[in-house]
Image (tube, rainbow, N blue to C red; front, side):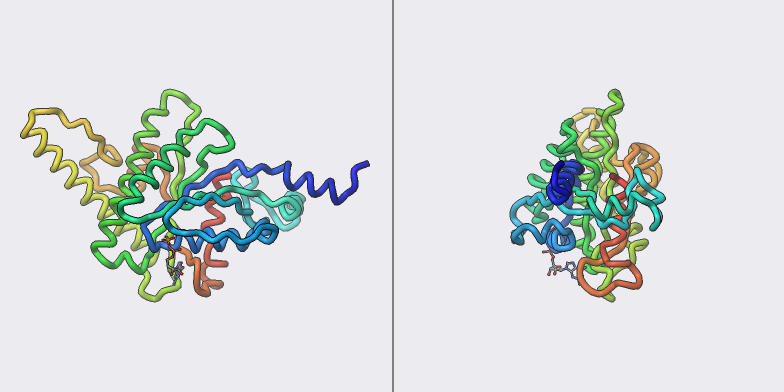
Length: 282
Ligand code: GDP
């Protein structure tokens, strides 16, 4: 028969094609490059390859492995004795993560267009499973940074809302879940995830209000009906991620973590809870 080693090799390369794609967005300096580099280093895959260096000017697509002990959506209640855990150790689940640059001018063109391309793909190999929006929770105390971050997030979520609306006729489009990775929780100046969520919601609410007001002024001038959509639809209610989920079906989770620093006790390995979120999408 086939030698065992060859068998295992074949199984590992063929049995789990990296068909689940995640897009990583967020402002510059949030820690996206550090995160993808860490995931690559953690993956056993990385040991076979020469280490790639990332620049923050270009999108990079890397294939990484989910730690075997992280349960997946299709395998939620995996216990230590579960045979599927052994299988996961032997043949780790892989996924692909695309890091995009976050610089002011570049991000609108690259980040959103990347989202557009990936989310429209019908090919199972390039289909978008989830979106990770990374923020620097220590930098968010600064008002300008908060506004900048919330504007970017608003635009991304509005894109997903429009996509959800257009796709509702065909059952094939599934909503892309969003993880707000509240990074740098190791810094003592960092806002806790709950506050990050509240601040982003409040800021997005302000952005929505000023957009509606701008539209009203514009339509008063021109007499045109405003056709621009409002994020979360219901403009009477204050914006919240819950409203977005309720109105549009796009689910947003805010989860704390840290790419750098020692957070063993509070956050597992610092990025563990984000990997658990990824696992739930698989
Ligand atoms: P990007 O622009 O989003 O790709 O951000 P980078 O990955 O280049 O990270 C920006 C800076 O933040 C770098 O100096 C990282 O070392 C640092 N950094 C990233 N994650 C963390 C973290 O969890 N804690 C701390 N303290 N620093 C971090």
